[in-house]
Length: 219
Length: 219
DNA sequence: GTCGCCGATTCTGTCTACAATCTGCCCAAC
DNA sequence: GTTGGGCAGATTGTAGACAGAATCGGCGAC
Image (cartoon, rainbow over all chains, first blue to last red; front, top):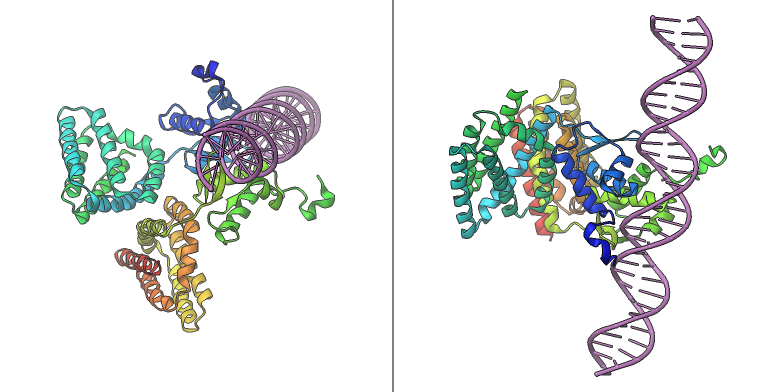
């Protein structure tokens, strides 16, 4: 229906789309931390009803991306350094679990994929392509999660990742950081490729401990 | 306003109260798994507007207690055995973290409290008071979390606990289960009392592994 | 000059009504 | 007897309006 004007998407996005749009805006930094999110404004900006905005904000509050103060509205949740460290500690526990499962379950085809990823990773660092390197790292993290098939852990990790992406990002472009981090990532890859769960756990633990220290040093 | 009839709570409960009420109904088993939750029905049952019910259902969906199918309503989320095991695996990782922190941070007063709890626990098992024992276990878990001061982990653990409470409960009343579980819990207590993080981690891990096995055996 | 009170404004919380969608049933056609 | 279309009821999704709480400004008192 409404065939005539569908191309322009005259009808506002449904709640799910709206939630995704606001989430992206927060994660991508278009909305600054602690910025107030006024329902009427968002309603106008995204062309949705206020009820839809409201629903989306509740959803995002559940995801930990938005703070809701009763009768005082919503704002973008600011993640403090202490909180970022807490998140990394939790991630450590969960990613250890995922990496162990991934190491157990990896298939030959996936071993080949990981071997290729290993090369790409090293090539990106050698070429000084920090952005590409950062992307490959994320890809690695995500693939390990997928291989684990652990829906519960994956869900939580994705939420935590969205919350801490800003700190993550800041760290990635510290001079010298890539050199340290690439060794740790390769260690993770090698453990999973070798199907050695115990080694994978150790490698993940070492890596996230290193990230925590680096974050602390950064202040 | 409406002073006259306030005692009867003529005005429906605010959304927060309503959410808590529905959450309790789900966790306590008043609503069966997979039961449909029809907005109009809940609205009548709890004396709230449909909009309030709707908001509450979204919130609970975020907490993983309710499944929402677009245009097809909400139902109580059923946690399968596989999922319950996944949840326990995640809980293992997080509770290890909390127990380690708790062991590091415990104060003399809290050591005394835990020593008392240890006695009560053993007394309840000796007396065959399964319900009391179950309650003390939960108290122990909760105190360890609180001692950890790890807000991120605590938040996630509370959500997971609400989801899996049904399986937990079923297990607790298996004959012979208390005898096994009490030893594991005492080991956890002893490790924390001794301020030995490493031992606490091991004790938690052993305990949850044992719970997973028992759940599997139960089918 | 500063503090506290009071009103206007802004924004959120809630409700009711309406539109869109889905489900199940009935009936006709093969 | 079975299958497909379509109608009716039930249920969710959306919109708009109203009421209540919080904030900010000015005004008066000390």
